[in-house]
Structure formats: C-alpha cells, structure tokens
Image 1: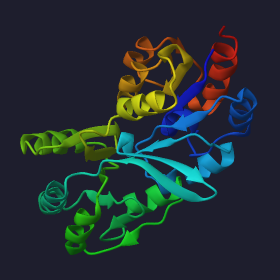
Image 2 (image 1 turned 45 degrees about the vertical axis):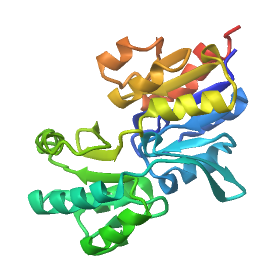
Image 3 (image 1 turned 30 degrees about the vertical axis):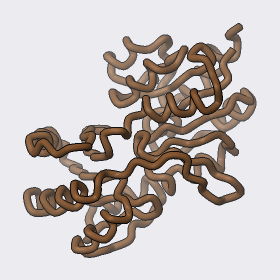
Length: 270
C-alpha cells in the first residue's frame, strides 16, 4: 500500500502552461495519500501548488537543498544546504564576466535576485508567477553569507548551456552540483542537493518502507528519486531513458498523467 507520493513539478505535475489541472487536483485529493513536491524550484515558486493541493507533508525545494513544511502560511525549515558562501560568490561573478549575454540569477531561501531585466527573466516570471528582486551583482557577497541555494542560467536559444556546464565543471569548485533541468535552464546547487537526498530524508522521518513510496518524474534529475522509492512512474513526455528506468509509464503532463498514474498504478496496490 502506497503511503507517500513524491512529485516532480515541471513536466510532471504541471501542464505546459505551468498549471495543476482540475483532474490532477481531484485525483491527488481523492487518493488521500500524502504528497511531497520534489523540485528544482524555490519555495515561493511552489506555494501555489501546495495551496491548490492542500498539501500537509514536508516539501523539497532546490532539488533537495531545502526541506521544509508549511504550517498555516509559515515555513518551517527542516533541513537547509545552501552553496558554500565563498564558492557561490566566486561563481556568480565569474559567470557574469565570462558569459555576459546569458541570463544569470540566483536564489536565497526567500528571494529570487537578478541584476537586470531580460526576455529570459520575463518568461520565467510568466511561467512561475514569481517576481524577482533587482539587485546589483555586488550584493551577491552579502547574500552569499546569508545563503544562496541556487544559481540559474537561462539560454532561450538552447545552444550554450552544454558548453557553460563543462566550463563550470572545469573550474573544479568544491561542493556544487551542476545540472540542466531542461534545454534552456542550467542550475547550480549544493552537491548535497539531489532529489534522492530529500526523498530519503522524508522516508526516514516518516518511518516508511521503500515499498510504501512512489515517485513521478520526467527528467534525468528524477532518476535518483526513482531509485529510492518502491514504485517509480515516468511521464509519457519523459525521454526514453527515463521511461525505461521506471516501474510504469503514464500519460503525458498535458494529458493528466499524474492523475492517470495514481488511479491506475497506485490506488489498487495491496
């Protein structure tokens, strides 16, 4: 019997407009199974889904860099793993100097910071509903001391991120994880920030067995989460390598794939 569901957001829970459909909301609520969102997103970008689904379980942001629980609108942090301060400050300034035409922004626990407006930022605002705070790059030093959880680069041409990712890896900086969440987004987090870490923490905290857990995802960064749960469900829009790694394959994110997966693969488990 499944007692906990872990859900990726973009490309999984959300449709291509960034919305949780009515059918998906109904299926999750009707299942009465606790749900944890496990996302590269910041907490403020997850709030609408937590509200729409009336979630009570702990949630995982920044790919595992922040684990928290909402209680009557207040966020209670359970685990926090920002990027080491000196590394985040050095990396932000290096990226700004080396790749000035690529959109660069970063996240603290409570804020999304950018130093100038751009088409990339406008598109991100439209999709997530979160408005950034504009701040000079010189402020990164202060924010680094307070805790930077994610550095994000956006390339709408989808041609530069492979090169930038390799350039970052060549720096051999300690304590960072560098991943592309899709062809236009490159995200840098603490090396502790992997979805598997967040899933394992919650399984242990709730004293669950692996067989009692399930996860839905659509990307390569969801595979570590798949390996930690008893039932893994890939979205129909996931790459074939992700589908082949899953227990089941459901419909796509624009065809209520999460709702279908819950109803057909999870609710009838003994």
